[in-house]
Figure (cartoon, rainbow, N blue to C red):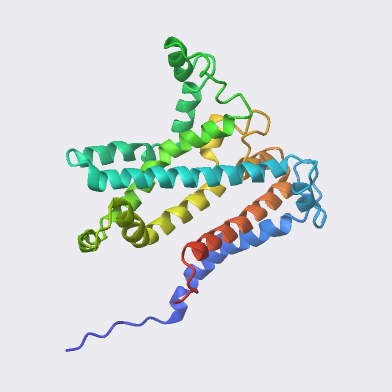
Length: 293
């Protein structure tokens, strides 16, 4: 007897569509609408101001352009570092390490499961220029010149946050890339060895092409995370010193905290557009085939 799949009427999806519309579509459209107003906690009136909020965000005299630059720099550097170190660790655990492999995997992955706020507060204490563990250790071994104002100097504060975020997230990237490496059949490497390919050529012409789906996944995840980063920055520097580590999400948070709701929704709308454009752009860059093929 042939099994026939049960087909349900399309209107069964109406409750889910209503919930999606109520909790996602309507609030999103409302936020976009408020981005064109002067809505704030300082007045009961809400007036239409056109593009005034967006003009303010992109005006050279304002500090908001720094939010975009810091977000871009954070995203770019963390993508490069996490992908390089994650791939290196994945290759090492897949081929180089023969004993206690599972132990090393767990140890490397542990930081990924720790809460961002906890990690941020811990490293905020470690990187304290006066009493932090890192500078105390450097001074104890005579490297006073290396002891820096890690979270106080505007020139290096963002890179300190980037380092901590890379340490936390590289284990997660390693797991995805390691899973991708383990799906590559050994036959390809054996055929490459028979053709005289050394380790570098095998990595370039066998590993990388076959690992591209996993690389695309981690790149998209890193891009979306980097653009939306908030917790680690807020916990470590709260956007300081000054605006040196201020990113888009901390800017949105502070705009709403200060009662500038119209400006905050405008910045959030810009962030939404950047997320869509960046995600789509990365997918098309790494997988240029037209959608649907």
